[in-house]
Structure formats: C-alpha cells, structure tokens
Image (tube, rainbow, N blue to C red; front, side, top):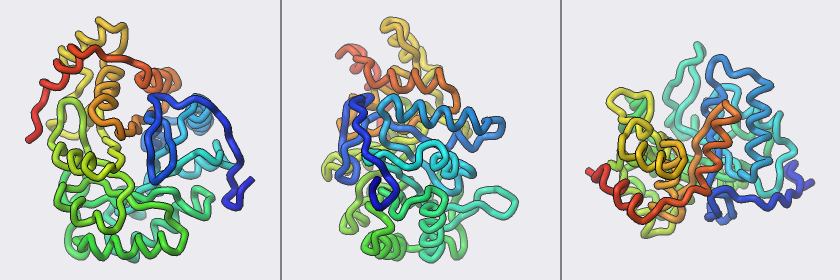
Length: 301
C-alpha cells in the first residue's frame, strides 16, 4: 500500500484503449459518478456498480463532493484504491443547506471544496481537479460575488497543486477564449457538453487538439435540459446501430472515440447491464461510411 492508501493493481484491461490524463495512462472508457446520487439508487447497488466498473478495467472515475453521497460510495467501494485508478473531481459548485445546488466560485470556496473532496474520498491528493465555470448554460449561472475572474481561481488551484493537494488542474464548461487564457496554468483536461448532435464546443475541442489536452465530453448522448437533442433518438444513429447489432448509445459513444484520440468518456449509470453496454462501446468499430454519415449530423456553430 502506498502513502496515499493505494495498493498495486495489475488489471490488464483498458476498455476503449488508452490515452493520457495528467500524465497517467487511463482507459478511454471511464465512469461518471453523478448518477449515483439519484433518488432510488440503493447503496448496495451503487457499491456493486463501482466495483464492477473497476473489475472491467476502468481506471478513470469522475466525481464531485457536490454529487451527494458519490464520494463516500467510491471510498467505501474501492478504498484502498488501486495505484492505477485516477480520481477526478470538480469544484465551483456546492450544496446549499436544503440540498440544492448553489454556486461556489470564489477562491476560498474552491479551497474548501478541494478539502471536502480529500476528506470524503479519503485521499491526501486528488489526481485531477476540474474548475467548473458558471458563465454559460447548462446549469447554474454565477451572479453577484460569484462572478469571479478565472485567473484568481487558477491561482488558488495552482497553489493547491504546489502544496500537493491537487495532482493536476482541468476545466469544465469553458469557451475557447477561456481555455486559451488558462493554458499558462497547465491544463490537463477539458470537460464540456458535447456529442454527436451538439458540437457547439468544437472550437474548444480544436484547441485541445492543438495542445494535446484530454477532452472529456459530458452529456455525450444529450441531456434532460430543455432543447437538448437525444442522440439515441436520431434515425441515422439508430440505423447504423441496427446494422452493427449495437445500441444507438453505443454508436454515439464510439463516434466520440473516433473524433479525437484523446477523448475520454465518463458516461455514468446505476444499472449493471447499462454499464456493460457503455464499456462494450469501446470495442465497437464503425465503418468509414458510418463515420462519414455521423460526421454530417451536426455542424459546429
């Protein structure tokens, strides 16, 4: 066991192949823990899903202290953590006293959130901490004293990195201009809403390509927010899935993997069969004709 409470792990599987995240080798199929906070998810089922995830070779888990019980579940299911497991969390939002989401953008709030993640995950250092900006949809929009200059936020996170509490810094929900502004701080990854039918973040992805930054799309299949198209409802996606004997969701995820070789997926679920489908998407091979048809479904704005 290492000083951070981790133990060696030699599991050979890497669903979807591998890419680098903060200098670490990770499977391109990861796991997002957000759905573990949803009402009706039993504790024993959540623990089983997390263990199934790691047993399948997934070694990149995305979480946040503001995801309710997610961090505690990860700790209870997986600690002491395998050496190769990369834990990624987010800061920039918080839970209000009544359990609803609230902004947490000020530098001192970011520091408190990092400390909360360290405590709930039971680690001395979080491998990657993503700064979730609240300048634009989806979700919360920062107001009043929560409208904070990003340079001040990055200075705080950089100090935490220098102090050993953060391994690397990422960004979430940013524009290409904001990513360019943040590059001198050293950015390991970017998480933006992006999928086969919504490529408004294409300029951000292009900048990630130019600087060899990991790209972690959230809402890869669409979302419950208003006016968000569902990739699984698209007839072209469904038709290709039928031809391949796959599900539309698998086709949409596989397309993301073809679009940039440093794309990392963090699709989440609380269902064992759905988890297996997501992991199997990493083995799905799209034909060149299928990729061309899917490429034409949306144009970047």
